[in-house]
Image 1 (spheres, helix red, strand yellow):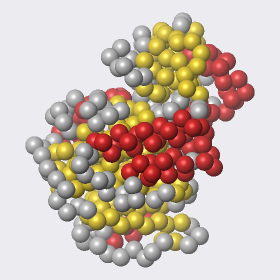
Image 2 (cartoon, rainbow, N blue to C red; image 1 turned 60 degrees about the vertical axis):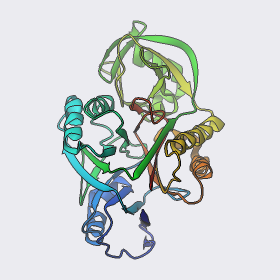
Image 3 (cartoon, rainbow, N blue to C red; image 1 turned 30 degrees about the vertical axis):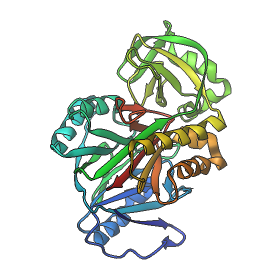
Length: 377
């Protein structure tokens, strides 16, 4: 596996000139929304890598090497030695189509030698839980799935997903990695502390929450937030919900994407099933960094005897807002575990897609560091 990275920033352009390469099979681009909206940089990348499949998304921060950037366009070009790559992109009209679109993506990429599916999704107009369910229930056992929901800083206005030289709203892009010589390890951990009483979800629909314990969910949530309630939905990133599902030993985390004052409702990145229980969560600095380290350990173990060559880090925007100037500590923690030989890329997201461990069921997460480690052997 040969990997080349490059970065564009407004003040100085590309770190190194883009050189044409006909060999790269996959190019990942993670960028500030405005740089994808313009389209010029994507066209430059297409001209430099005419044979590659290009996928990427808007972000709430770009990860390259040991650094976290804002307002840049980060590129990682991957030339696999033994692995076949096939991609697809689907446009979604409505969040209600998420499950069906997931099934369609799985159908398009299914093959006997499919080893892993990596996807990037719109971060606001998709029900991530249903998308993941549609994909995973349509793939054979043993095929791992990871990815993330695109971001838009802390603005929550519009997210974009790129496929080849076009970036669009309401788009999902996915690639399959095929063959026996690609090893994939994945892990996802949070590091948040739960507090307050557990509350029953008494009225919800899909990813929209209306009532907890028979009371307005929005009113109850605002009471907990106090002065932070004025900044919703962005301040909701600081106080996610821990969701306990009947068939899951480990709770999953849900983050608010939108509030509706008229309906007195909260919209989340994934399903909030009626009859389940939730608790409020708050940040613990050291545990957030420990969570990143733990996710790296899990991903590394998934490779078994191989050493990671590339690691794709997808971390929640809420973690970035909490860690602030310490945000690179979680990237450094991942690097310390995976070693000097690994190339790091990734972004800060509105949702993370991964199993907690390679053998667990794939889920949509919020407020986690999710890692996909790749190696050829």
